[in-house]
Image (cartoon, rainbow, N blue to C red):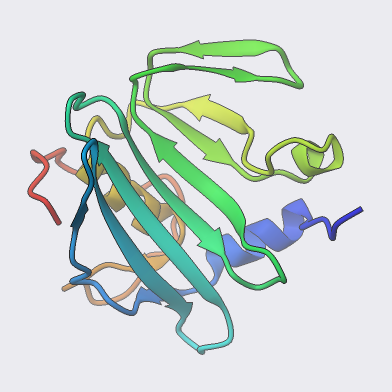
Length: 168
């Protein structure tokens, strides 16, 4: 069995103060998506992460922002902030989220069940766009925002104005 990242370790990674290394990452275009890939590191430089932003060009509700930890031999997705374009089922619990924005959370329980670490999701009304989801991820994961003085370290303070997607 692969190494399990415990819920305590995940919480520690979440609280760890971090910064974007390349806040002005260039967007990439494919036939169907616009993507951005960001590098993130802890302020003390000991932990490395990456963030991706993905927006479907044909469906404004089909977007995802995720954070991955690069601290093991294989990356692990710690969280994904998805749009409302699809249904999601929490396979262990059997409950379904139907066409609502939702946040996937890596859990020890899902890893132990040999599921995607971030297979568990909860509905949210904290964002409605790609950029809103990105700002929530930055706040929730204690990542210093560009042009912001300090990371807050406070979870749940991501109710930002959900401005239109400006391509950042």
